Length: 136
Image 1 (cartoon, rainbow, N blue to C red):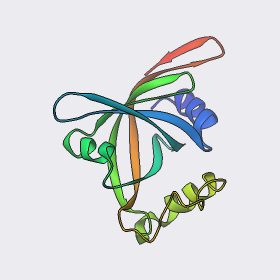
Image 2 (cartoon, rainbow, N blue to C red):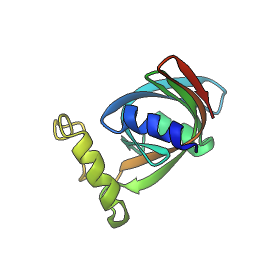
Image 3 (spheres, rainbow, N blue to C red):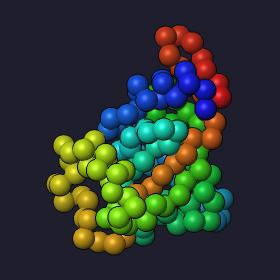
């Protein structure tokens, strides 16, 4: 990814940000939902439950649509597994820190092994900054 694009994405989404994730079910019906996410090194990360419709759709088709503040594009989604898995310690720490204002309000249950980290690697997109359009 271009350094300028990565810089803009980091500037805009490196803290708790609302983005939309669009998936398609196996009947071809599109679904979209808003999630809290953070952007780190070419990917968005969020916390979800493995039983959600979005995860069912992603298991059939990992290509998703993503959009947020003057940005839209596509990404490849993948489950990184249980948030408390040892290999997730680094990213889990960053997510807990970014989502601290709401993380412990009962929405996130780290005792449930189906509480997972969803990674969406940005594939392409369009972003606007200072009246300029950047396509990648």
